[in-house]
Image (cartoon, rainbow, N blue to C red; front, side):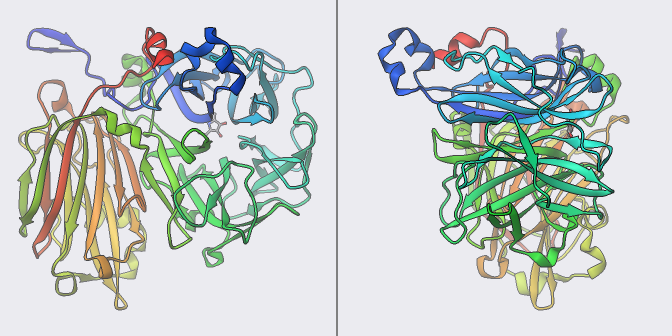
Length: 575
Ligand code: DQQ
């Protein structure tokens, strides 16, 4: 705790509007479901106040015993919300209490069965620490808070398979129904050294049989985790129920895999055929090494899990964002782990990439606004945005690049590794042709501490490559904090647009950025020391050789959401 103006103030990187536990450890998002009021409930006035608008139930990996990840102690945390912004913590939904999960209730998913019965599929670590798949059901589906869950005695529903190695068999997806009326789910597994997405089928959700062929398998990446498999509409931004199908009828599918080594999530859009549960990627030239697929978030976000939000006809995705300070810091803070702000995801018009954007309920938190319009930022320019408390802000900016052809530097194919490129050519202090230009956030008054989120545009074989980076190397003067630079390419036609947009959510220790309308995302954690005693600064900067124009910038100060405080339940269930 740091003394501020003679008072003690907790400065521990807590966020104001991102999902985080009040105390203890949190990691992967597991299941989410919007619980809609069944029509009959309108005849039961007693339930009405609780059910008025229905509730979102969010389940996630949680250690109810302390602020560190602990293999054997993980439970599923449970929180509810009426708007995906304000949350009440309900405790744990399932705990490691049975022989089939006594060493940890690990990741999985939620599925709402026909008739409205909520179910979990999850990985248990059994008495010998072996990974098996289990099921749990809501004891009383009519309880609006779904407080009690039961694990049938037939667990595990899937034992550890003989051909799986290294105890890598985990994280079942939300189940979907095929046209034959059978359930399917995907489980990540290491089969004879190949990272695989195994498909299981079931008629009754209890007895599951493995397909002979996996949906995906590659020896290039042996350890996969947290798969997600879901349909997307070919046109428009609406989401689809997880069981929606019909190749050739406006539905494509997305296979997302979390890659253990890089701790990054990769996905591919493709066509799914439920006959043999095959998935054919739209971009087969990227191969089966998922590290060459499209990256969901280039930053420190992992283990994404989406759900279909029937209340708003959209698909919403969560992503876990770990801590990058020391374990000792986490113990001192008493908590660890946040979730990226829930994102709506849909298919881009190019049919190949996803667009990700914070759900629009975030706008209910916007308070004071400042803006710029048609502001030139010359080479070397630094323009401060004043008038909002910028450590808790939502910033949207559009940069126009008038001299793209003249200023863009040639791209060197050696720079294809975005991480390296970000480090070598990154940093707000570097000078280039078109860029670096972007935002400097969470900066101390003397700029000793600063995080730059920026673009740089290169010319390559008559086309342009747009690079986006979040440089954390100067984010904090503290020594025991991991400070890297994260980046990737934004798949946009900058030659046509001559402009690029950036949205950045700044929330104390979280910097979450969306480049090119959500085509590239970078979510990171920062721990600046100045934030304990003084306010942070926000700038637009340009270190390119030519001018860039800020055609529009809007920055909103954000209100503080109610996130998992003990007394929030009444307000949330009655909203
Ligand atoms: N975290 C869970 C596993 C999963 C990993 C355990 C991914 O089930 O594979 O907390 O972060």
